[in-house]
Amino acid sequence: METGRSLPMKIENLEKLRFVDSIRVIYPRFKETMDLIEEVHQTSLYSPNPASLLITGETGSGKTTLFKTYIEQHSKVSSKVVEGIQCSTKNILHISIPYPVRYTILTERLLTELGDPYPNKGTVAQKDKRLTTLIKQNQVQLVMLDEFQHFVDRDRRKVMLGVSDWFKSLMNETNIPFILFGLDSSNEVLDVNPQLSRRVNRKEITPFGYGSSGEKNEFQRLMFEIDKQVAKVFESTSDLADETCCERFMYATNGAMNSIMSLVRQGAKNALAREAERIELVDLARAYEKVTYVNRGKSLNPFAIHDPSALRQTV
Image (cartoon, rainbow, N blue to C red; front, side, top):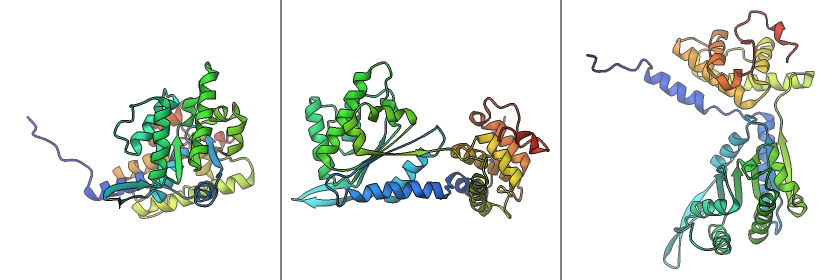
């Protein structure tokens, strides 16, 4: 009877795998949106009525990566003593909205994040009052909420109206901006309340295109930057920005950032497992077969065919 098996992956490779999984490329679109979030954040420091922002996009467009990256770079939690009592503060209040959800549940989740010992206790009005008080006591400068589309209920318009009124009231009471992230349907929560809609600017994140020369240049630049990062764990670059390779990636992912990174990461892992010097087409072909949410509905494996010209009518 076997007593156990040694793991096939070397410690060195484990470090490389961790690096591959942590890669985030600051491409122009990403930086533009990060700068926009920071601009909204800064208004909380000087404006009595700061505007908020709704960021929408298809699944896999990179919204959650933006959400997490901004929090990692800008979130600050500190503590101080006030009248002999140790108090903590956090400048960014953030959660991912669960499903199904009501605004009363969101209030309780936010109270929990702010350290309220009894988030379920009290009436709706009492919870809202405690939330406003804790936001001010914690010196919160920005509220960030992911998965905002979970508030959309197509069959119960009154719920949507209640949600939008709750947000408008909380914005008025706290005078701090909100950054909301969600699918395109998130717009409906704002559309039912013109007063709230005027308080919230909107930014849509679209997939990368590959039709015009400008779109091709943008996409190749993205793949070049990704390749530079991946090359840190190999002995050379992998020519990911090559025109034919870009065509293969565009067919595979339809320009969705999350799908691009999933294929690159899995391709890198496949190459590391082979102890290869770089990512090859065989590694990407195997990655495409493994990452099933990317290949669903497609008839070809774009990394397995010799001539990518067959893909051009779909790119």
